[in-house]
Length: 165
Image 1 (cartoon, rainbow, N blue to C red):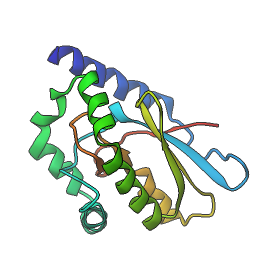
Image 2: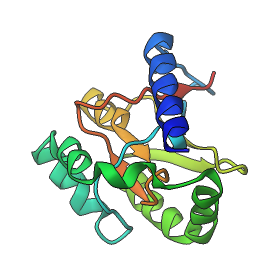
Image 3: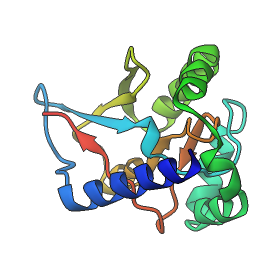
Image 4: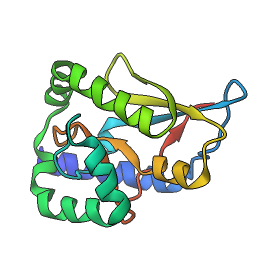
């Protein structure tokens, strides 16, 4: 099982690195829609709605914060099955919603939507968003693989966003 999971992650990383997805697709004139697959996430410390803002500040001060957290907690990452992940998302949807609403407000996101099958989250944000803020958004991911809520990936860990036209 563990070996299968490693193989899956390796394949996903290879496919994502090859696809070179365009992250500037526009929809409806003034918004962009981005889909982040949950299963492509990496661990970046424990995060809940209470410490989300603190984590964003910490990440802004130390861009390697997440890769440090990943190295520290790497054994936790591969313990969850798909059904455990789905159950966690369903059970914690209120916490996730609250955290995402706070994150949206502080980062000028337009809205977000968790897909019904819990396979991904869609983020919509203003096209006129400042470039540095947009780059920060590129580092945002949702982590359920390790049964946490929200994470920011450090610069050493590149998880491509899949953009929907």
